[in-house]
Length: 125
Image (cartoon, rainbow, N blue to C red; front, side, top):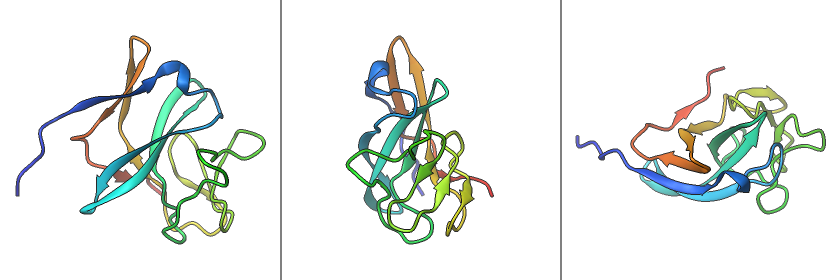
């Protein structure tokens, strides 16, 4: 088994992510497939997840790049209403089966970076 070398890719400018606002979409390789992912900002910190509900493997946004509910406190799946915690991806209610798959981000000098060699991990229950 070979391991991919660490790559840190600039994903977006810090200002592109507004607390509880629209997401920045991007693509990742997961389980041998190219999958859609999204980055959001919640309580000042950037977070990213696969755009795949754990209830049914469908994209979650109700409009392009919109994941937060009206209160800005939950990430919602538009199809069946599964709710997830924005900072951990953990299931918070509705028909979820575990947590969202988290993608490692960092933020320095006004840029949000995606670390490609970090394994994508489902959020803990």
